[in-house]
Image 1 (tube, rainbow, N blue to C red):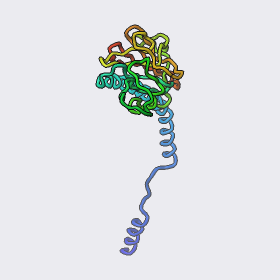
Image 2: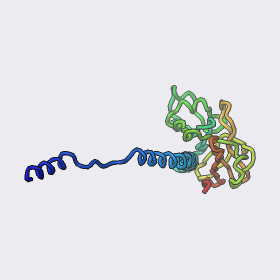
Image 3: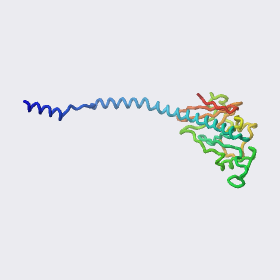
Image 4: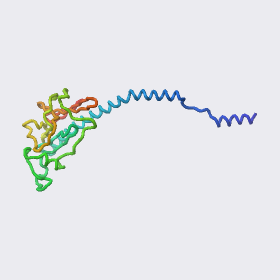
Length: 226
């Protein structure tokens, strides 16, 4: 009897009862995961797209504000340009000749007026031309006519560039009193609407047809869509 009891104890230790999930339980869990993925993934994708266009709006607003502060800090006579150079990229360009004493390339000419400056020469001066900035993936500039809610906007674009001055003001290059357009400018598409005392930039995400805007008043203050 003692031997039989010991055998039973050893057997129970050797072959413990097995636990885990049955095949049906695993299939139910996988089905729940598939249903949740089908519901949540499109929402997550929409959130990522919304995040991208909001990030683009904040990036453009921040860089215009930075250009304004650069114009003030350098006490520019001509200005600092926020230039849209393609449908998904832009540059910040200091127009004043920052090295008027240089006598040889890469400083072939010197200028004291907008009429005398050359876009081609500016592009050869890293100290004055910032790197080309790209909008986030699948975001591009669009006609402000497609952003009707923007303050002062909602009409056709007038220019590709905004000039920021040493007093913090902003003006569109299409305005005669703004100082004129540098020479040797390549063919650039207009994406900025200048309407009265406001300028407007519209951003578009083709995947969702979602748009956001950035508005700049004549004093250089930047406002972005809530």
